[in-house]
Image 1: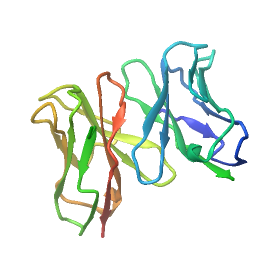
Image 2: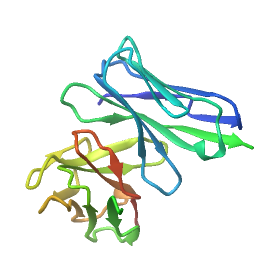
Image 3: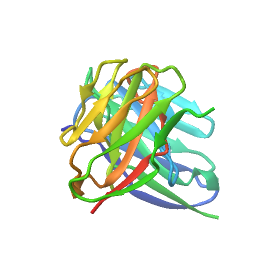
Image 4: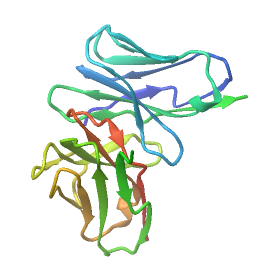
Length: 110
Length: 111
């Protein structure tokens, strides 16, 4: 099946730092989504991207749909403790079902 | 505002037993999904329902059956549980063909 590779797998940062993570694939996607999962809960949709080059913000979060359509990026500015969790990217190709990456686990030291 | 409600939250089964995981949404969404999440992996789609009375296989449907009897409810059944089905199961719903609202999951262990 299609594979999405998220990088890094885990991050340990200080509160207040900016965060960058990405998601790459060998296939072209026409939709990219970013989710966040808190411990013991289901994922929450953060941002949806539908066009190559699109840049979309949600508060301190900004995501970009890569120009090649094979990647997407998520940035978090001025991290706070509640940003802790696992961030998942997901991509859709044509009419096929959504494919999820393996997640980036974010840990913040106060 | 309940959103997507899954029951039970936890369950332990013996190999060969059967059970049904329940999911209900109160947002009047047409699309509903069942995913499983295993350690170190992203979510994998088991089954999808675009509307009441319709279902479609996802990436990992073997060993599972689903039922969408009405717009609110989408159940997942394990007819003969196997240890490989130990996982966290998530139900989701959406207005669009992309999952938007997830439940808090059912943690299932099969011994």
